[in-house]
Image 1 (cartoon, rainbow, N blue to C red):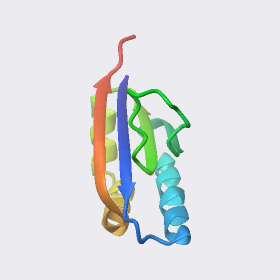
Image 2 (image 1 turned 90 degrees about the horizontal axis):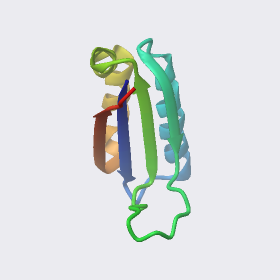
Image 3 (image 1 turned 120 degrees about the horizontal axis):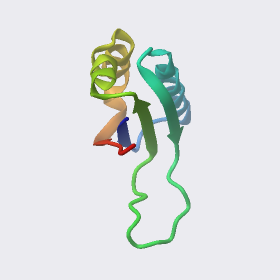
Image 4 (image 1 turned 30 degrees about the vertical axis):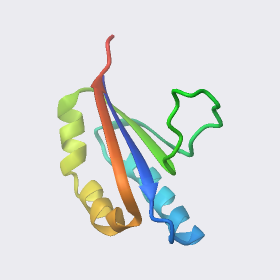
Length: 101
């Protein structure tokens, strides 16, 4: 299994409607065939000092393997998402890992 996680620090001047459009667009990526599961959410309320909750929106996606992830990255819907929305964030951090069975 291939896990792809992205954390977005949004531009401070984004309007609420722009933030909601971004969230909707992230959720719409579930139409990409190689994507097995997708979650979009806000930082959880956690007071533990090791938790970085400074981001605005988190995305976690699951693929069968690295090839599925590669297909997602090059898919027209993902590319269109990046082109339309990449101006909405100041920073995005990506963490990928191969999960043990």
